[in-house]
Image (cartoon, rainbow, N blue to C red; front, side, top):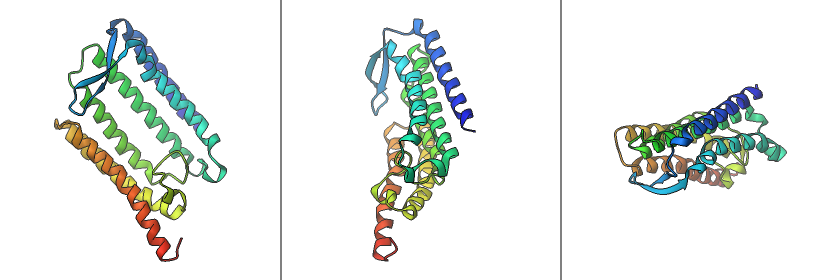
Length: 215
């Protein structure tokens, strides 16, 4: 079961590398790699950086996917949600493949509003990750890792059941706003709120349990 996630990830990384090699002769010497809140270019890199921003980061994500279960302390391991862990990491690899494709397509002059395309991908990422949050168990690398959630299975599980809802809702709402041509700040604000709500809830719920002597 584990091998299939690595196979898909490696194939996606190889495809991103091949796409970068094919597009490389058509890329300008300097490519835009960052946009401000208004969608205006404000960051540039030499074109060779596309090998790092796409296939390089994807390969690093695969390496981390392999390392994190080994790095995790035994009582905070990935065994309790192994399949979900690999699904999450594969989603991240797919996002990087998408972002790499958008940047390459934009650098060759095919996309007018690059920031909207990138933000739409991030919104989809939030929605997909939210769909899996309820299955994530206590660990140091994945999820809403506040001190209060890490200290208690009960707080962790309640926090991530809430995060499953807020991340999906904020991701879908942000995607809708992006599709309808909003500037970046309303969707980004929704995404931040979607992540902040469960983090704050973990503190509130933990203190409630402490007052009731249940923690």
